[in-house]
Image (cartoon, rainbow, N blue to C red; front, top):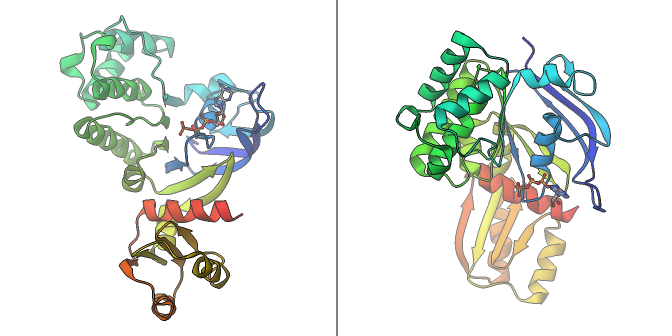
Amino acid sequence: MNNSLTIQGVKKTYPHSDTAALAGIDLHIPAGCAFGLIGPNGAGKSTLIRLLLGLLKPDAGRMRIGDHDLATALPAARRICGLAPQDPGFFPLLTVAENLRTFGAAAGLQAAALEQAVDSAIESTELGRFAHRRADQLSGGVRQRLNVSLALLGQPPILLLDEPTAGVDAESRRLILDVLRQENQRGTTLIYTSHYLTEVEQLCDRVALIDHGQVRFEGQLQAALAHAARLLVVRLGSPPPAAMLARWRSRWPDGDIEHDTLTLETDQPIDALGQLAQDGVTLRSIEYGTSSLEAAYFHMRAEVELT
Ligand SMILES: Nc1ncnc2c1ncn2[C@@H]1O[C@H](COP(=O)(O)OP(=O)(O)OP(=O)(O)O)[C@@H](O)[C@H]1O
C-alpha cells in the first residue's frame, strides 16, 4: 500500500484574515517515514493537518494521501488516516471503551473486527484499567492516551498527530512515544507536530520547520543535527556595547546576537574565538559541536528572522 503524502503549492488564508496561514507549502512525506512538523505558535502546522484531513479546503494547491487526490477522493484518503487532533473530539459522557467502539463503528468497523480493534487499541495504550471510566473523568495524560488510541483504531497506515503529548506527564508521554515508535517500525507513516523538540528528535527521521506559513527547512533529522553541530554558541559576561554590536553584525552578518548570546555557524570556531578575545569581551560559556534539534531549531529560526 502507498502510504506517502504529497503537498504541492498549498495555500490557505482564513476568512476575515489578511495574512496567509499557509503561503505555499510543498512537502513530500515518504512512505513509512516518521515526519516531524515543527515551528512556533501560529506557524501553520495545525492548519496543514486540518487541510490534510479535509476539515478545511485549500485556496490553492494539491494534496495526495497515498494514491488519493484530496480534491476528488477525500473519503478514500480519510479511510487510511488515523488522527489525534490537538483538541480531542471524543464524547465526554461516554467511557473509554464506548468512545473507541463509537469511533470504530463510524470508521466502518463491525462486529468481531470492531471488538478486536478496540481491544488492540486499549492494550497498546495501556488503557485497560480506564476502559469503563467516562472520558470527562480522565486525567490529562490518560485523555491523550485515549486520543492516540482512537487514531490507532483499525491500524491505519498513516497517523496524523497534532501535539499528542501536550500537557502530558512523563509516564504517559513515554508510553505514547513508544506506541508511535512501534507503529512506525511496522511501516506506518507518522506526521507528528510537537513543541517538544527532544521528542521529535527521538521519534522522527525527517523534519520540516514551518514558519509564517512557509517551509523554512525540510530534510533528514541527521542533516538538521549536523547543521547544529557547526554552531558556535558563546555566552558573554554581559551584552556587548552598541559600537561592538555594530562591528560584530558587519563581521558576522549571518550570526545571531540575542542579548548576551552570540550564535555563529562556522567551521572555524577558534578563529571566531580569537576575534572575540581581541575585542576583550568576557566569555561565560562556549559550546561547539553539540547537536540537538533544539539548537538547530533556534539557529534556523534566527536565519528566518534575517530573511
Ligand atoms: N479558525 C481560524 N480562524 C482564523 N485564523 C486562524 C484560525 N485558526 C488558525 N488561525 C491563524 O492561522 C495561523 C496558523 O495557525 P495554526 O493553528 O495552523 O498554527 P500552529 O503552527 O498549529 O500553532 P500552534 O503551535 O500554536 O498550535 C495563525 O496566525 C492563527 O492565528
